[in-house]
Image (tube, rainbow, N blue to C red; front, side):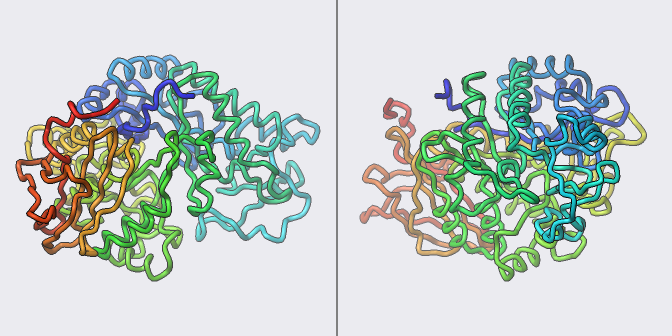
Length: 550
């Protein structure tokens, strides 16, 4: 049992150390630079940091091709720098989560190099081999259009090895007892250095071995075993799973009793949220929310608008996907892998501040825990001249200083966006800090409001009828307190009449302005929502704290 379900009401912020802040002028962000920016993150309201891979790596896949699971990439610092960072984060009230990438290694990892060269090596069976190329070698690629096969010939091993991702990322044989023991050892190592949780990469592939030998039995038991190991080592550490699976499989990852993954990213809701935003129709989003409803108290969804990858639309049908493409990524160069969009949110909305606020208000009020990506709090853009997903991974824009205040180097790890409406001279933290109406200050206020609404993270939710397909109304209840949230997904204003769902809801107190609502004689609230408008209401008066039950 967890000592503290802190993740239920956390504000998670995702960043890549190498593109956040460079402290030594080599053009690459590092842990010392990140430590210097913890005050900014704490001021924003962040309570948990999710760090993308920072291990030693050839960097052919943004650090997801790892050569040492127990180290820090030399350009980012040392293990000592990492420990200093986690210590400073704790002082700022921020927990640290890190990527756990154990589906595969780099083909330069010492394990694989020895496995290739020596058939009698203990590491040989840590990977998946076949003497002949399997018939399905051209199926199951994660990166269609870029990746050609899932089996590649190794001249040194005189055999084919399986790789779900790129050919330089051979899959680990996670059903091998020694491999699973090693994974637990990796988790235990980082827990000792101050980590509070792991975002577990590609979980369906970790537990289901494809290729030469099929699936292993009791595959989901592996998740429960890892959860038990985690809880025994550190009582409040968590696992956040990347598992883009159909809703019928959600419980396989959460566990019937909430005893596997603590949290899952809700890809179905994310994709249908973009469909709803593209069509101004809340109904697809409501359906996705209902399909992914969880009732186990220990289980929690993580909601996001954008992450470090492309916007994956693979769970939409072809017509729906094309509708989102038309609205948010109409040019071929904006699309990726035949299923996604490689853009940041601000340019997807053509810089429309009303729509940006609507999208983030929606994210912060979906049933679960919000995950914000670095730079989105200031409305950063993308660089479509960069390959694949690098377009949305450019350095953080801190100021109007050269290289956006990210580095003093002439050349940075990825080019800083310097031109156009999203160039650093127009979009940066320093300018927005001093502008009361900036997106940054709006984000800080909305995070503060979200922290004061634990009902969203903890409570039971239901959809309220608005009689308009354009307006989504959700009510949350927890410990005798309630909140009602409305979003108008349309560019046009809409008048709605709705019941707030309880006898004590005659008064709805607006949490973001003085625009409160009082029910009419029939107990109905009448409201006009401007185009892309949103409202956060507390049910009853502002004495709700006095009414909260234990």
